Amino acid sequence: MRYSGFAVLKEALTGHRGWGPAWRDASPQNAYDFVIIGGGGHGLATAYYLAKEFRQSRIAVLEKGWIGGGNVGRNTTIIRSNYLLDGNQPFYEFSLKLWEGLEQELNYNAMVSQRGILNLIHTDAQRDAFIRRGNAMILNGADAELLSTEQIKQRYPFLNTENARFPIKGGLAQHRGGTVRHDAVAWGYARAADQQGVDIIQNCEVTGFRIENGTCIGVETSRGFIGAKKVAACVAGSSSRLMAKAEMRLPIESHVLQAFVSEGLKPLLPGVITFGAGHFYCSQSDKGGLVFGGDLDGYNSYAQRGNLPVVEDVCEGGMAIFPNLGRARLLRMWGGIMDMSMDGSPIIDRTHINGLYFNGGWCYGGFKATPASGFAYAHLLATDTPHPTATAYGFDRFATGHMIDEKGQGNQPNLH
Amino acid sequence: MIIDHPLLGPRDAAEFVYKGDASLIHRPDWQADDAAAAFHEYGYLRDNPAGLHRELWFHEQGDRSWLVVTRDTTTHEITKVELARDVARTEGRSK
Ligand SMILES: Cc1cc2nc3c(=O)[nH]c(=O)nc-3n(C[C@H](O)[C@H](O)[C@H](O)COP(=O)(O)OP(=O)(O)OC[C@H]3O[C@@H](n4cnc5c(N)ncnc54)[C@H](O)[C@@H]3O)c2cc1C
Image 1 (cartoon, chains in turn purple, yellow):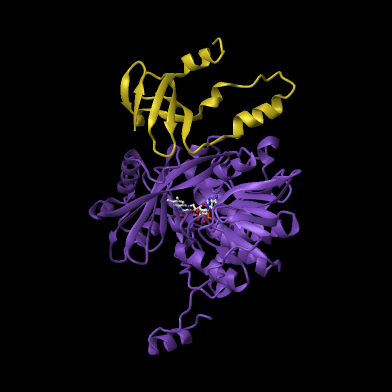
Image 2 (image 1 turned 120 degrees about the horizontal axis):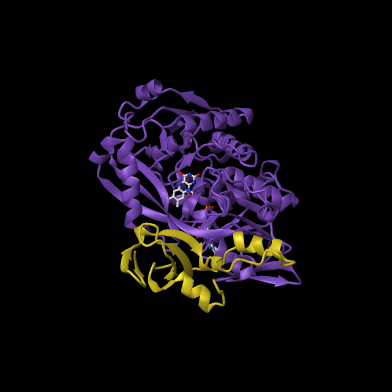
């Protein structure tokens, strides 16, 4: 059924008996044209665009748990396209444009909220770097505005602009950035993909690949063998574990990132603020909780929980610029496992095995990429050529020296 | 996390800096014919296991020694801590 104001009204008057499930609970067929491994945001978006834009038939998404149970449901929901480098900026701007039309496209309320994002400036050198970044953004068709300390004080009077170590000297704003209801992204894409005929198969773990003479012909799963002409891995923080089953070693380490949410408060923080120098970022959810995070725990981890030193570090960073945060109680905190790639940028590419494709290495910035990642991956799967905005995301960049190192941290994934 | 330093005894992991996979001890020979491929692998590719992992920790806020720590990446349990120098020597390096 199509969601609309009229449908809501009709259901309200008839006891809400007409709502059906948003997608079918499909059982696996013997074979598909495309099998996508991972029912996160990226996997579901890939399936949707593959079916819709590239008109490919017989597509399945295999998810080991339930869809939306991975990082798509664990992140701090920030979307933006304030990147600097050529390999990245057009891609993230493409993604932001897809976000802007997402709800109409999917007929689903994902609560896309362009409340704006503000990166704070604390030194003259940082101002120069942000002016350069803002210019790169504008050259790529994105929006950027440099704000003075006075303008920031008007909008965020509670920020500590006089901090002795990191006084706030201005900020780079992207007014089109913001937040999106993360679970709704998974649900919206799942429903729209299902309507295009995609089979979404939950509780189906891929346990191996069937590879014959250098060609992948399907996957072994907890629900039996499933044949496929093309197999597309898209499992976020599990990439190394999955691809090891095809005997591949990746330029990736897995690390945990924690996030935090306070008790619900009255509206206080209209947009997203980031304090890069101390590494703290924060927004206020529609329910009123302050949602914030900071650095990685910093060592390889699959534990899906964080450790206390980082909790202390993030809260200290928050208190330094946002002192009234100390009056709010912390409601909960959690951790997610992410692929940290060696240059901090993602990979969307074919592998050396025919018919096996890879999408991963999103580090802690992959949520904002969800629509473009899905679109670009679908493009690659359908046409065997990279999407124009994703040509730089190949495996070979590490061998050829064409890294896309936004942060300039080299091959130290825990620093990106 | 507590790291049981072989010389200094148990120390809080916050005193250390994480430096990655312990395989980084074995720098490839830059004059070998396959040096470019070997350095690509050395610099960028990782096993990244879920389970036991041997890794380098640098005691930056302590005695500045490098340690090889064997840790389970699914539980954070540390089962072995060695001086990186000793590991390199037993694995055939002279210095
Ligand atoms: C705490 C935190 C905060 C973050 N904040 C932001 C942010 O503010 N903005 C931003 O842009 N990004 C953010 N990110 C990063 C972002 O969440 C991820 O990069 C992105 O969600 C990953 O893509 P995904 O949604 O497809 O992953 P997931 O939702 O994790 O999807 C992968 C799926 O694959 C499944 N899977 C794994 N192995 C198998 C298998 N063998 N067989 C079948 N299925 C399998 C998993 O169960 C999972 O559902 C954050 C991440 C974390 C952890």
